[in-house]
Image 1 (tube, rainbow, N blue to C red):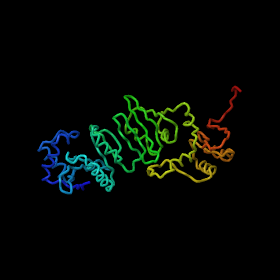
Image 2: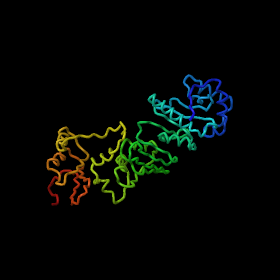
Image 3: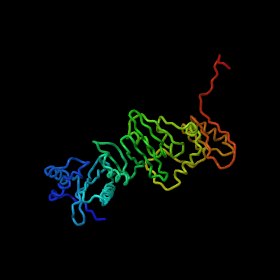
Image 4: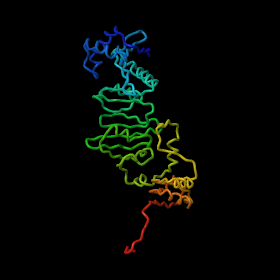
Length: 349
C-alpha cells in the first residue's frame, strides 16, 4: 500500500481542494458541492487557521489525495474523519488514515470520535471495524466513539435497534435494545461488568423491561440494575434465590481466560478469611448486609457460622450448591428475616 503523508494545508492547495469539494459524488453525504469562493473560504477557516481543523493528505509522489479531519471534539476526545478524491477510493486509504489518526489521538491521551450520515455504510463499517461504538445522534449525524478503556461496544442497526456487546471478554456476550414508540425492551444483560444501565440510558429514555432468554450467568449479570425484568416460569427460582452455581464458581468462569477488565470496577471486594470470623468482625463494626449467600458442605453449615450470619442481620440468607457430579439428596431452606414475634393480650392462640 502507498505511503500517505498528512501535512498542513498550503495556499496553493486551493485548486486541488476545489476539485475535491465540487465533486457531487464525494459530497453526496456531506453538503452540496462547493463553489470556488466557498472552497477558498473553507480552506482559509479550516485548513490555514492557527489551529487547523483539517490537514492535507498526499502520496509519496505528492499526489493530492484529499484531507483528514483532526481537532478537539471535547475535553476528552478528538474528532477524526477523511474526505478523499474518487480516484483513491477502494485502495484501503480510509482505513489506513483512521489507524494513523487513532494512534495520534491516543498518543495525546484522548479518545477518538467520528461523525457520519446514517446512510454512509462504508464509513460506519470502518468505524465498527476499528472498535468505535455508537453513542448518539447529533445534527442529523450518527456519532461513534472509540475509547480504549470502554467495556461496551454499541452497534446501531437502525435508530431504534442497538446491539451492546462485551468483546473484551472471551464470552463476547451480546444484549439487544429494541426501542418502540412508548416502551423499550432489553434482551439479556450480559456479564454484569461495568455500568450497562448508563449505556442503555444514553440510548433511550423510554420505560424499559428486560427480557431474559435464559438464566445463565453471562446473560443476567446486570439484571440487578433494572427495575423490571421477565424470565421463563421454569427458571424464576434461579433468578430469585437459588442460582445453581456458587459465587466462586461464577467468578472462576468469568476469569477462566485472560481478560483486561475495566479499571472502574469498584463495587466488588474479595477477602480470604474464615467466614464466621469475618461476619463477626462486620457485626462488631456495625455492618448490616442485604444478603448472605452460602455454599455449605455436605454435612451442613456450622452453628457458629449461622450465629455469625444472624449478627449482621441480613434480609436474606441464601444457600446455594454448585452441583457436584454425585448422587445425593438435599434439603434446602430459604431463611428470611422477619420482625420478632410479640404476644399481646387477647391475641388468638
